[in-house]
Amino acid sequence: MLAEASRSSSRRFWALLAVGVLVVVAGLAAAHLMEERGHIVTGMNNRIVWALPHVFALFMVIAASGVLNVANIHSVFGQGAYKSCAPLSGLLCIALVAGGVAVETLDLGRPERVLATMTHHNFTSVFAWNVFLYPGLIVIVAAYLATIMDRRHGARSGAVGVASFVWRIALTTGTGSVFAFLVARQAYGTAVLVPLLLAMSFAWGLALFLVAQSAFCRWNGVALPAEVRRRMRNLLALFVLVVLFLVLIYHLTNGYFAKQIAFERFILRDGGVYPQLFWWGYVGAGSLVPLFLLWGPRGAAARDGLAAPLLVIVGAFALLYVFIVGGQAFPLELFPGYRTASSFGDGVIQAYVPSLPELALGLSGVGIAFLIALVGVRLFDFLPHDEAAAPQGAGAD
Amino acid sequence: MSEVDHGRRKFLWESAALAGIALAPGITLYDLAHGRRPEAAASGKVRWGLLVDMNRCQPACDACVRACDTENGLSGGKTVTDSQWIRKIDLTDPRGSVRSLPMMCQHCADPPCVDVCPTGASFKRADGIVLVDRHICIGCRYCMMACPYGARSFVFEPVANQKPEVPRGKGCVESCTLCVHRIDRDRIPACVEACAATGHAALLFGDLNDPQSEISKRIAAVATTQVRADLRLDTAVRYQGL
Image (tube, rainbow over all chains, first blue to last red; front, side, top):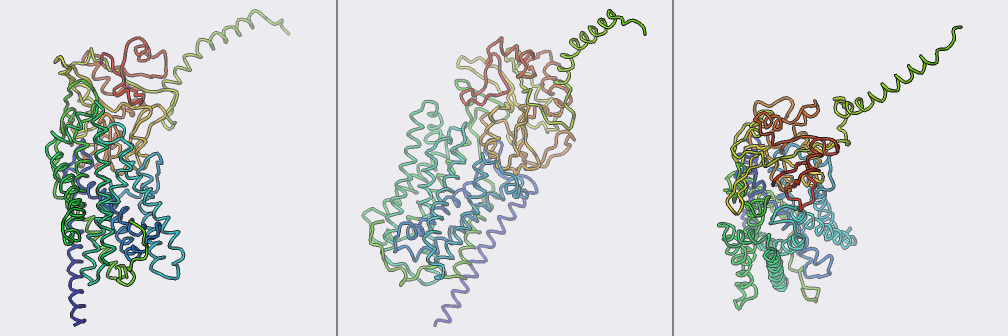
């Protein structure tokens, strides 16, 4: 009986591995095509220079920071109930950073020169800081995993845990600053983007953790205690609400400034696919429905199911698409009060249609993260155990 | 021993002094204009700039754009995936009046593209010209996100027929260099030359740091505008009549 279960688990592992490898190979083929023929094979142009691959990359980098929150709740805030989830949380963090950075790198115009970011630094650039923050997070989280999984180093896990918390806050601050420091575009250039991205990281990272944990636990025949699941659901709802609040603040502030009203009309009402994605994708499906599922008068099955975290992830992609692509589709305002026209897209809403290579490249980042997590769970003891997961901390979430 | 001819000595000294006084400013000016050896660094004493006279710029004329394409080996394509280092923008005011101006890299004193470039590939020369080092540009396009003027182009396709003096490359970002290769040989930018050849003479090139240069005198005498002056980037391209 046990042997049969083991064989079945093994077959599932190899099948999932094959799927992951296929997705990654497809992405590498897309990157090769972009390298050979140039970015002309993408839907990008000189006006929309960051697009679908950046939506994937940004989602993964933001979620990587947030998914570590589960481990930090144990190591930094002393909530023992989360201790059993810390290893998986750390593994997913490393996997997501690797996937996000891979997509960002492969989307470069000259990916073979990525080492130039290590040899030439311009520290007025947030990007240059991120070059250290991303690999740094992987190193710190790996050290953290070593301290919590090897009892000989257990005494150091608190200090390394705190370091990982500080580092991931710095990383998400750096990611938010990439956009916050853009002075001339209506969609960006505001400090609220930093706390907004931090809140996004909490919500999206936890949503991803719940999905991944549920899947890996099911595939490996283990379960998380109901109390921990309840706490996580409440946290997810709270984080979704905070993101929604900050998004509201961002748009209200913009709407108050006369110079930003045209942009707000575009992104929230007149911009075609962008308002649709914002209202239906992010606000509706990605926020209100999950809140209803998590806190509404539904049964335990609705609260426990994967629908809420999956919808939060769908909403995340919708919001990032609106933020990144919609933010560039709206034209730069060079001459207030004049209508402008040129051969270079001045004064007009830019069209963007994602291409298949872009989608393949973006998905390959997810594939890389998936493969790292899958192999990690297979080789090491990353999954929570029932006996270790007994609630210890009595404090509120 | 013959007697010293004091009158002759005095004459020689005075002649030498007079020659010195006469030649010194000329040599200094020559030094400013021609003194840079090819291997010497650009001088911070000068700041190259352009003045665009919109009253002279003709909406139907694109001589500057064509000259730029030819000089720099650009394809001349006019879609949003083509490199366009200069573009003509038609401005329509609320009353329906249409005017036209050339828009290119504004060579800011505080360029956002330089601030955000992770490798330092985007840089500003001592003489104020903002350039891209094609050897360390990784093609991340962050500079394009940061440029308020939409003045930069990403090379979307393999390039052919490159000019030896204007290296380009697929996957890199590029923009107007003010024809730096011409400036370093004491020639004016191709767009300025082409505009003068049409007879419009809407573009004036010169040293913004020299109060005696024609461009400085014009900027001192007439009202000029910097595009997006609210950003306080101190652009080297100024517009008259905007």
